[in-house]
Length: 255
Image (cartoon, rainbow, N blue to C red; front, side, top):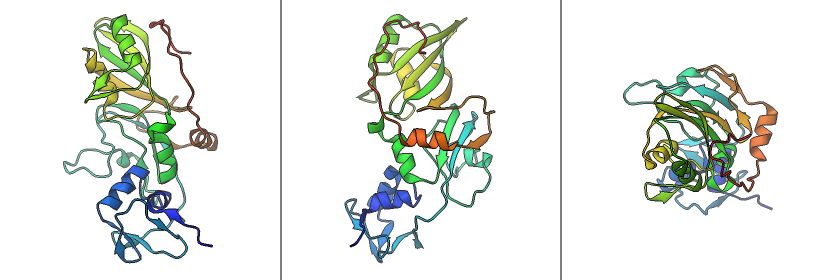
């Protein structure tokens, strides 16, 4: 009996990229199955008998899996190559002999926890909105913020025509001319934190991601990396979303 699998899932298992990325490859016509272009996302293949190619290279899922944590510095792009020769996070990593990709992104001026892997299924579990993995940030904003605007951020604000999901937002510290927030979001829209803060009339001065799921950055130095512990990998794979009730005490820090 044939053991068939959808083409996008197979490509992700072969570490060609996240599920979303490999679906782009399919629809762009760069994936071949048994010598023919495959643009059908519902296509199923038999890994033992069908030949799958990307850029004339046969795709296989027998590659060793890597799971890394990097404390991304500011001033680095999360991309494999930049046309303007700017620094990329991959310059901070050794050559593992496999194609690694980032799980989600952090923008050029954002620092903190970045996960990298060559396991497409693992990446999909983390970035897919349905799993609602919490992502925790330390956010320094310009000036003070009102209770009203904290509540708006907690309930969701409109950015780029779409409402954000409810978030956890707490004031950590108020300084002269700035406020430090702890924000937890459960989705991954592009530059989401910056746009959320802009939506309530303020500006992000500094942004750092501290945690994804139950995996914390802790004391990993800026610019350094380490492999995820087996317990961390299992924690991310098995993470289950929980129903969250947001505190109405907007200055009370989350425990």
